[in-house]
Amino acid sequence: MEKNISEIKEFLDEKVAKYNHPGFIESDPIAIPHRFDRKEEIEISGFLAATIAWGNRKMIVQNGHRLMDLLGNSPYDFVMNHRPEDLERITGFVHRTFNHTDLVYFIKALKNIYQFHGGLEKVFAGSTSETSTQPAIHQFKELFFSLPYPERTTKHVSDPANGSAAKRINMFLRWMVRNDGCGVDFGLWKSISPSQLSCPLDLHSGNVARKLGLLTRTQNDAKALAELDFNLRQMDRMDPVKYDFALFGLGIFEKF
Image 1 (tube, rainbow, N blue to C red):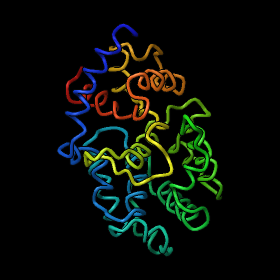
Image 2 (cartoon, rainbow, N blue to C red):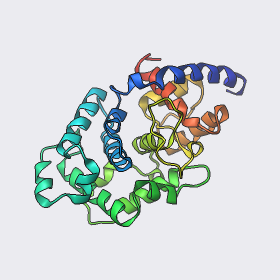
Image 3 (cartoon, helix red, strand yellow):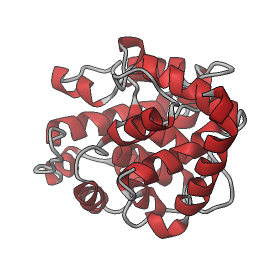
Image 4 (cartoon, helix red, strand yellow):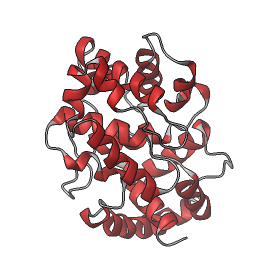
């Protein structure tokens, strides 16, 4: 790959410029947090939207908007001030295997994080290493499930320590951390650097990365993510995850 790295970088940089554009927000799960202006509202809506970001993209966005409507279009206020009857009002929400039981626990866990642990940014920043957010994702899951929880809900928060690429949480972190002025990612979190982020690795980005020679491992797991991260950092050490736009765009829109 080394002899081609400059060509690959030039090709991917062009695709980043094409897809890192506000015109693509509406059809992407990031449309959900873009409904809000307040930091906490963006964080919570973004985390919930990322949590259900698997399957049909149109359905993800549709259910994300529906979820915000159920939370009174103020997810932070709902999380912090909900009453038992409010939780009854959201009965019936479902996205694939994520259902009302899971949502109720998520709301309680998020309240615990904001009320007693300083919020999502502080929790993630507290365990991020100099070169990776993967330890932070593991510690986040430990804290998230520190309340009594339904066993079924644990599968909705991935853990790199268990071999997962944690695609959805890495996507959420990209949204919160990257700040390139393009209007897509929010750049809300200043305590984590874009250089520490990992690429959200899924079927589409993984297949494109393999075709380009950026990934040899066949599984989309934590080991594959480490390989992809290493190679993306060869092209941009300070902002490797900008290439998520290129890999995803090539896979989804260009069927590369």
